[in-house]
Amino acid sequence: GQSLEQPSEVTAVEGAIVQINCTYQTSGFYGLSWYQQHDGGAPTFLSYNALDGLEETGRFSSFLSRSDSYGYLLLQELQMKDSASYFCAVRSTSGTYKYIFGTGTRLKVLA
Amino acid sequence: NAGVTQTPKFRILKIGQSMTLQCTQDMNHNYMYWYRQDPGMGLKLIYYSVGAGITDKGEVPNGYNVSRSTTEDFPLRLELAAPSQTSVYFCASTIEGAGSYEQYFGPGTRLTVT
Image (cartoon, rainbow over all chains, first blue to last red; front, side):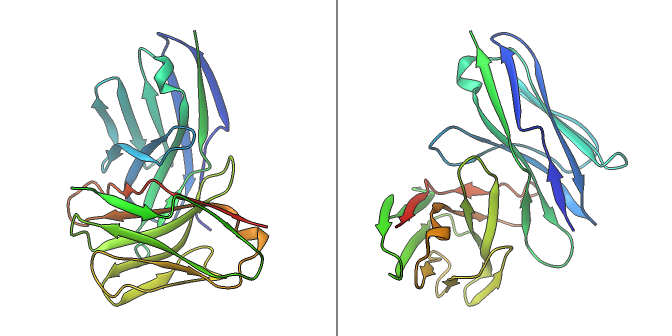
């Protein structure tokens, strides 16, 4: 089957750096995406890695290594508003248009 | 652009009742999706559509039906509601070929079946 695994919860303090990992088992995909979801809200797109390597968008960076079946989201200079759930996601290349989302990581930022 | 809109925002159903969750997007996206999210869990794909008149099942389609008569609208029909369908339902859309596969989500419909 196809699955993306993430740690269930991560805690860090304001101003710190935190890394949220995503390990996957899938036969093939177009790229790795990351979404943020605040409590009671809808997921919003953060970043996308089509190729291996690091993509940077402001305080957020995302990394992909297809050879290691692994990716991560790096959040720098943490702020209280970063407290949310984060999901990795891929779109399968299996001939359909199905997106698969990870199990989600709840990030708690402490003052 | 309003993006992706969903109605209603909240709904309480009795077991066995039926309802339609509405989803509309004004971005001319061909691809649309319905997900459900149970408390503390990730998103599970119910149905998706790659264009008007074309729909297909996702991971958890049982108990649901969809139709796609226009590019803009992608309603989700619940027949004979069951407590297991208590969840938050998100509609999303995307445009293929843009290179990012970013999905745009609606605000969600919070459904309780009692």
